[in-house]
Length: 344
Ligand SMILES: C[S@@+](CC[C@H](N)C(=O)[O-])C[C@H]1O[C@@H](n2cnc3c(N)ncnc32)[C@H](O)[C@@H]1O
Image (tube, rainbow, N blue to C red; front, top):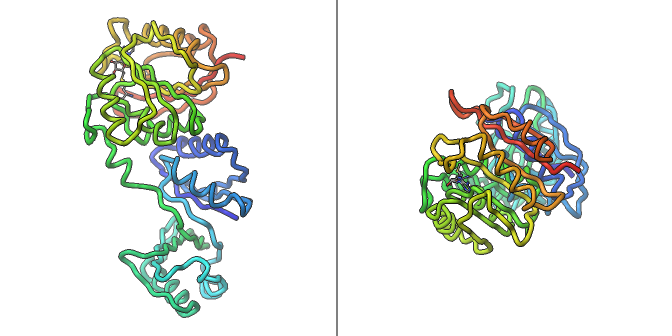
């Protein structure tokens, strides 16, 4: 069986990197095929795990807009026979809507939606069209020659990342990261439900909120007591209970239980304080201290400004770089996201 993903195109590498990280973490046995920029197929999924895989991807991914069950790929010229050949009653419950998304195609979307909808209607008993609130959603991706006919069983909560924007939370402070990037970083850390995730520069708790939603146990530390309190306020706000927050200077951090993953956004000295140490100094102190607070196989996912060369510090402290992504934020800031492991 196959899943079709419509991915965000806001970054050229992160959506696929995030997907690969989730597939690896959740030990999903699939074959990936990039059929078009922004369109990915997950192939050869066994029937007994298909629904679980579908639900996990919908629950975890940030840089993916839609995940669908691919029913069939047909050529545009064979639309009539192709649509007729599908047993729609196994997908459509009561009422449905067809929505076409064009990718490199100049077909008339509304006309194609109507055409496919009417073929489905005339071949299936006891169903009707409901465009405003359909029980069953049929997504069609049209490229130059082909139509990918899909069934959308589960929906990603698109509104979530909008509603969770930092200024809409009860505790706000400038310098927070977007919830989408925070979720992506959490996914890159390969954590599973029940793992212990540490953010030693927790600020307003944006990263911990995303790790908590995935089901991690959380520890957040910050040198500033207002941030420690604010993180707790924001975690409470979204109903996360399995967390501890502490006022700690990273240079003095000693965890009782070592972290399964560290995901963090250290201060850059722009809108957040570096506690008098300077940006490069705080990164070095942080890397030295964090190394003995994480398990040997734990990953550290951190953001840093491109103005700082962390690679020489990584090597000196005993870390190796696994993956790296650059995100241009504005003219004077490019954020670097690094996935780092302890040297063996
Ligand atoms: C960039 S902010 C973190 C933003 C966070 N990801 C969020 O979404 O709100 C960095 C945080 O590091 C804290 N900080 C600065 N120096 C520190 C230190 N030596 N030890 C621990 N925390 C420190 C600051 O108080 C600030 O809250």
